[in-house]
Image (cartoon, rainbow, N blue to C red; front, side, top):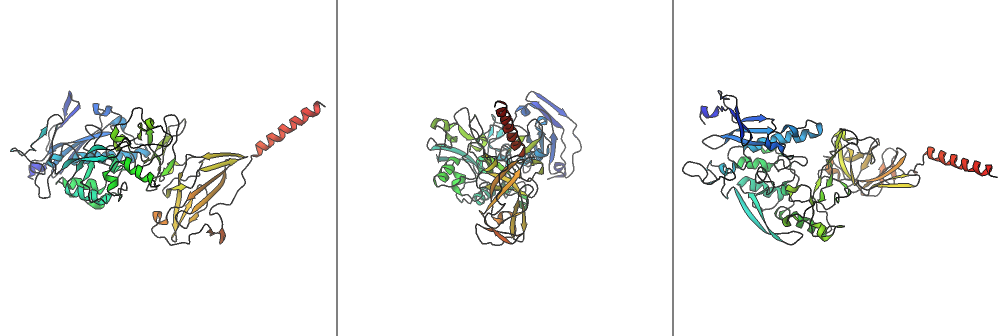
Length: 525
């Protein structure tokens, strides 16, 4: 580039809507040696009217020689911004997400991508522009060596198999990263989003396939910028990414061609028929439109609690998104209405982090184990949230017992608890408890504690030590464990048996009641 080309100098033209545009600032001397200039605003525009829009971005200018974007614009919608600590992750990820759109992950830039030799991937006309301009959509169309449409002719649905088109980014590095991630050599490339309309479709990764990759079309949980997104930037021909900075994407990792090339409905159906869990998808109903049926589970990384987001919709889902032939407790016709609450994921249900507000307050909590602020007073299942906490599964729901009364906490099948790695052994702890050793995967730790006048009983299932600790030693697999403080064997790993409480105040009321009856009886003698 010449010196004049490297000195970007622009005044800012801005449109609140298609018929309300204005220009601010004056063209200046530019920024010498700038590779890219980003204009950031926070203005309530017409595009911000959608409740689903947190921000949006676009490139503003491309340099002449290689078509690389040299200026971009990001607008953050003020009404959607939150600086609450629970939203900090979303806010930072949103800004990075929009910057990447301006850098190249954009439907308006695909036709300008170049190969490793600097040659255009899409054919050009005599003026050096891509040969096909889609005037209706407002962008140049790309050749099939960049994005191609593939027909999945045996797409499984609850109504039978249908033809399902998918749009694939098929550039070399993207294809290779996708194949490596899913362990599928037959994979044609990386699937792009097929829903959401302008601004979402084709300009994000497919949510069903890449769930929490940060460049999918909606934020759900734990966004990561993976090697796949860096590969797209490299395949643009404009950047050389440092792959060591990529974040690890666990979703779909090494699950094979059946996961990535077939419908989630087929994956779920096949797993259930084999008696296996359909992870990372799920089939537990969150609510049936009348009452909550939600059950907490651990995310695959054990960093948070999650709920299966399978819910009923008022209208029948489009046939290609009917992912169940049957659902327990739901009629055949009713099944057509059930799908995951994230529509961009092709209505596929999966376990998702959640948040809530405390009653009669503005205090918010969410299900991430690492946030100490998520601790609650009078915790039913004795959870502990904090930097050393991870999610652990239960053998069965916790119970509360008191004076012959029994309550089952059936909505809980997982919780957040502290962990510690010491001398090759994993230890766990519940609220205000000693450390319990976990000697082998699947070992049960029996918790029995009297809190707030109730005997609370739960059984935590130990994970593999290797999930949490860098150094682990083998222990004998037994139903007993050694009480380190007493050097004795205990038949039930965890707490000793306790008698259920019966409050003194209640006993006193019974004595007083009997005394009154006796007095009445003596008065009538």
